[in-house]
Amino acid sequence: MQKSSGILGNSLRSVSIPSSLFSKFKDASYVIAINMKKLEKYTSMRDPGKTPEPFTSKDIDPEKLVYVVQKHSATALHYDFRLEMGGVMPSWAIPKGPSLDNSVKRLAMQTEDHPLDYRHFEGVIPAGEYGAGPVIIWDEGWYLPETEISPGIRKEIRDKKEGEKAMLAGLEKGEIKFFLYGKKLKGSFTLVKTKGFPPGKAGKNAWLLIKHKDHFVVEGYDAAEFKESALSGKTLEEIKEKG
Image (cartoon, rainbow, N blue to C red; front, side, top):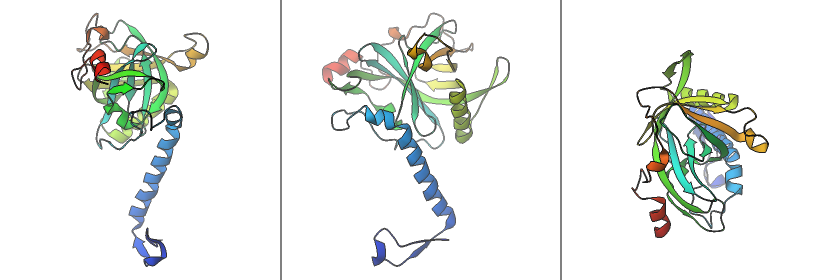
C-alpha cells in the first residue's frame, strides 16, 4: 500500500492507495511525460492561441489503432499520412497521395509527430502560422500491424499493445507493415525508409509508401481524383471558403 495525504494537503488525513492503483498512476504519468517529449517539436512550431489545430491526445480507442490521411493545401499540396503508435501519430507528407496501385511507390517525407486528436482536425490554419492553408480529412479509419511470417506472407497482429510494439520497432528499423481499414484506403501496405534518396538532408526523412498485392489493388488509382472529405464531403476549396 502507498500513503497519500490527499490533493488538499495536510487538511486531509492520509489515505491508503492500493499498490496496483498507485502503479497505474505512475504508469499513466510516465506515458504522459513520454508523449509530451514526442510532441515537443509539434508544440514548438505552433501557438495554441493562434491556430485551431489540436494539442491533445484525449480520444484514445482502447482496442484499435487509428489512422488518418489529411489533404493539406499549404506551400504545396500534399497528403499527410498519420498512424497511431506509442500515444502519438508519427506522420509522413505524401506529395502525390497514397495509391491502391501496387505498381507505384509514393515518396513519403516523415515530419513531426502529431497528437492523437489531430486526426479529427478539418479546417483552415490561419495565414502566418506554420502550414497555413485548408485541411480536409481525406481518409480515416483503423489499422492492424502486420508481421511477415515468410516471404510475401503476412500475419495481422490483433492485440493493440503487441501491435504498437511491432510498429515502434519497425519505425526504428525503417520498415513497417500494416493493413488499413479505411473509407478510401483498404488493404496491406508497407512504409520503407529509403537509403540516400533523395540526396542531401531530405533523404534522412524519406520513406516510400507501397501497396502490397491483394484483392484491394486498383490499377491506376490516383488520390487526386477523389477530392471530397471522408468526414464532411467537402473539398479543400469549400473548407477554405467557409474558414
